[in-house]
Length: 423
Ligand code: UD1
View 1 (tube, rainbow, N blue to C red):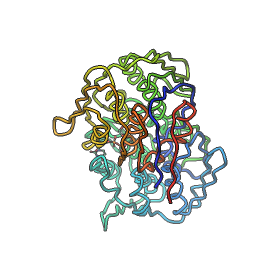
View 2: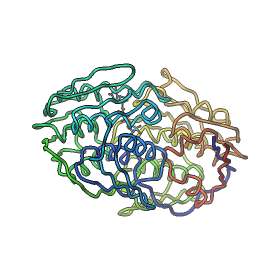
View 3: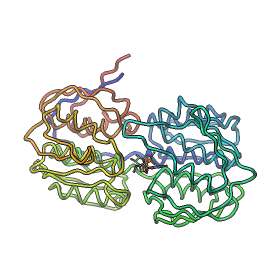
């Protein structure tokens, strides 16, 4: 398994381009199963999660052509099997999202249940209840969801119990080919949901209200081909800005959508950074200063994203003052705390492990560390950048799932980082 060796102390400086959004791209790849004609998706990041999704489509007989720029052409009508096996769904939960499109387009699907993951149980009950509301007949058998429908799915009104990004996306996709109108309430409002709705509408769907908590989908009989450019990855872009703030550096992120990061830039300003925002760029200058402690509570969009909690925690370890970081989305999302404490951080968990109290220290010390989820792993890279000495971050396959060319991008900013490959 590959590792990263990072020598701490460098102040990150320079310019980077944000990649396409992983969370948008994986869902849009699943949604391509709804089309009767070829679709082309561009600005897709070169990541392991994307390769897993492509592997899944290919395993079902779908013809996928990828060019050297990661433009992906998908011919869904070559499909031969409607099964998503355990081995693929287990490695990436988002692959569960093929269930709704398969069911809506072909009337049947057999998809492995994703099971638990490193950040808690992460149920899919709302995905299944939403599909049932549209008329799906669902059975659980040997760890698989077997779904079928007599004729087409039927439009319905459905209210989500909690704000769920994947759940909202899943039912939106299925409803696109249903007979009649679907009204979804208490929907998640994340930008990736708007990107998915734009993709569906480009194929001929009639989705409106995306970005609000009520989404209306007038079902159509079939969907055609389209070209779609995936939005910028707000989590990736913010990760580099936080790393810049933590190291006292100066980084400009280009090709971003600044309004998607409003809450994050305001938290970065609270840390003492000078943040300048243009039409499609964000410039952060810390001028060599030590960051100030920043307290935060994670919440559904437009609140503070859970996917950036770990990175802010890393910055807080060496900040001036004490910060309170509260996680409200996932149950078990503080695994990185124990690793950071091994590097000399002063973090204690309270409230049944839902809140971290971080007392800033002057400096972290290098130590071998590892993490078992994507954002926790990258937060350890930030901790390593601000630590004294050489840190080895183990199990970086998690980072490769969601950060395109992480070491090249950090090297471009002046970080001393290298990949140690092992067989
Ligand atoms: C997506 C993102 C992930 C991000 C998360 C929250 C993708 C591929 N992943 O994950 O990076 O951290 O949104 O912003 O887009 N829940 C239920 N029942 C369900 C579904 C969800 O109770 O059927 C709960 C979850 O346990 C969690 C909360 O809803 O507590 C939010 O999860 P959700 O928004 O669904 O996360 P994902 O879509 O899996």
